[in-house]
View 1 (tube, one colour):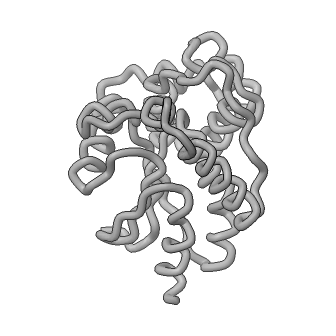
View 2 (cartoon, rainbow, N blue to C red):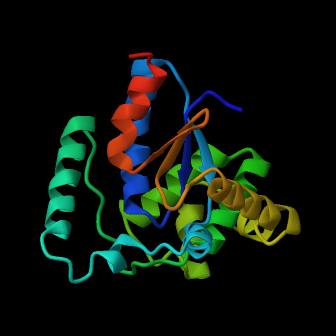
Length: 201
């Protein structure tokens, strides 16, 4: 099992995006590379009977306000820019996540991850519209047509299911989730603990 920290992510999670923004500085400080693992958040929710924060926080007094405070603290602590709220949220990310696996197979994974997060949370678009997503990914210098076509192949679909099922079996119930060996951490705020663990503090 990899001792490098693993980052289980879905492009549909704004907190996964903020984690993605914070990770490079952690890698620089610790000299440890994070392993990005694409998962399907909808599949994890279904398997664990979980719901998105947008649903679970609806009508709860004070908690959404506190989470905004927590996000502000995170932005300051990790010196990252806030996301731009995607007006089309929630976005069905099935095709985006399959294309992430396709990008792994095609050797352009890091570039694709950067592009997809950008078009979800920096210059947000309706990324579950195939035409919109295709143009967005192509504008980032990737062969979008090739990736989205490859995303339909059985081996790609199977690999995303495998990543997702494995995440649930290991204890995941949402995104962002991090693993360091068998140790599980959930939520962007726990990146502090992840960093402490990998740096030996």
